[in-house]
Length: 119
Image (cartoon, rainbow, N blue to C red; front, side, top):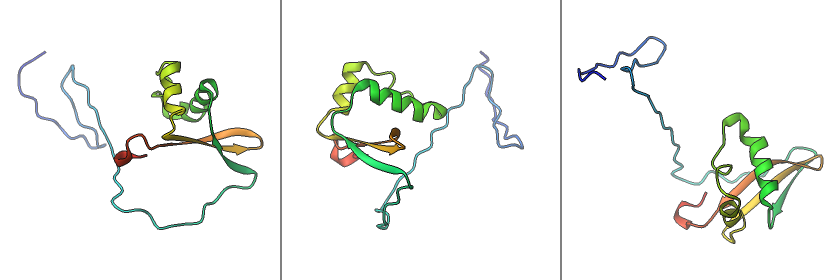
C-alpha cells in the first residue's frame, strides 16, 4: 500500500473516494434526551401482545430470524444456546410477542440488566 497522503474526494452522489485497501465504516446512533409524550397504545385489528414468560431458545431464534433477516440481524443468532437462554430467561429481561392470527409475528425485548442503559 502506498504511503503517499490521500485527499478524500467528495463525489457528486454523496460518496467519498477511498484509497485502495481502505474500507469505510459508518455508524449512526440516535439519542432520546427526554421521554416522548404519553400516547394510547395502538394494536392492529386481529393482533394481540403477549408476555412470553419463559421463551424457548428455538422459538426465539425462529422469530428473531423471520423478523430480522431483511435487516441482517445476527447478534442473537451468533450466541450459543446456553448464552442466549441466559439472556432471554433472565429475570431482568422481558420478552413480548405480537401475535396475529395465532402466529407470533413481532418481538420486543426489554433489557433491564443494566438500569442506566435499559433498552
